[in-house]
Image (cartoon, rainbow, N blue to C red; front, top):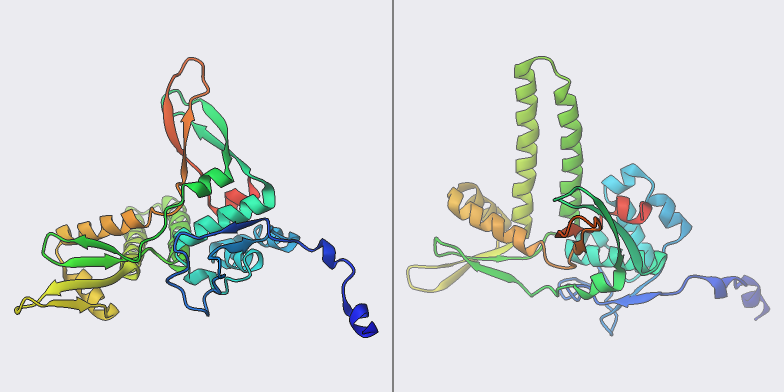
Length: 289
């Protein structure tokens, strides 16, 4: 008994405690137990960040490869074991909740008026942002013009990380390309960078497609869910169908928490009202707020 008492930390009463509880957009209905342990209430306990978490968010490499955000989520939402396998909409909501649990309900948003270019500053409520959250449906279905039925789900956070890293690398490439003096070399390098981004966008569409349904000669509904067959179809379909699929995938990946705020321009001579994006990107959202 005395040994147990000696082993207990006298500071344990001062350890962090949950500051809020969150029902994520997917309600965790798509995830297996190895990805997250869903509480009976359906609401995940959100703990505030530790000093170690904050230091990790200052590591550029860890932010780019997603490790900083992944470790942050595992630290602040212990029930979640594999954050990279969550949908991006869930990760967005979780990050907003962690920001609220760690830094209070209000976040400063600076936005330039598109009419007069005046900079307006408004305070956005974390709770209000989370209140705009849309629940994710079991699947999203679209009838294509060629008679096929597309069934999709949102991107995983892992795919979003790849997109962010590719965008960063593309920006770096564009800077390097601008320094090339030979026009042919510059054009070749630009085409290489463009092809890489196009390939990544294609892979993300494949990641989002759950299945494609068709009607066979006997009028029966068939289902194709094999990734290789879906890839083969997307590589060989016409541009009109491809555009329909791309637009639908982008549409469903905009669901989750509303990432904009309506602002009245603060310039007395301008009566413009406009939507401004709320930057929930971890680099700015946690370290710049």
